[in-house]
Length: 238
Image 1 (cartoon, rainbow, N blue to C red):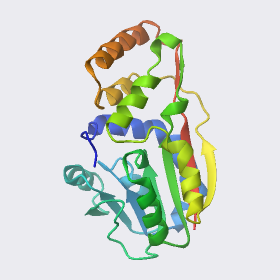
Image 2 (cartoon, rainbow, N blue to C red):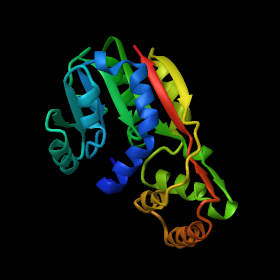
Image 3 (spheres, helix red, strand yellow):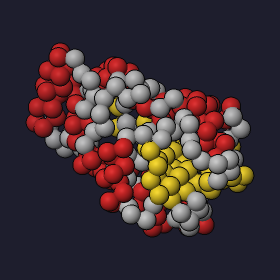
């Protein structure tokens, strides 16, 4: 189980907006308009659920284990069916889904169990699209603003896997998925919101102080810094 609460809805929506171009490219590739039913796996506050409803070709089931978040998601996307359940034990029939979508979710889950469950519930010819980070490859410049080690320690301390991106293709292939991997390749100006997401993780006192120093420096050099998080864009067909 998660050792911390979900970040705020506002922060997760900002994260989802940042991923929007890559997500749109993946969903076009798998011809989302021709696919349904669709599972929005670990949907959280439903940041993408309405998009799946609007673009998809069938019913959308949005699943998460956090009941309060699901309540807010239901208000944002009333056309979906919302299910409170564990992603490693899906209350769904075999071969019942045509498309599964997940975003920055698997690093917090029992990924081996989830991969087996998604393979079970996908129809033959179905596909899973996933966007997952790899904090081990975080690129930051200048070195004085580097938060990589903070992310690695804090994600692991919270019970997550900060290297899930690089591990996921092999785990998917092992259970029989046909896997294609792309990377988020475009550099964008780093958002100060990244610090808010990091503060939502369990930091120790010295780490909190260090993060405060980095934030102040980041503001003073705005426009000249680089902070690029590798994101694995996975298309896994069954």
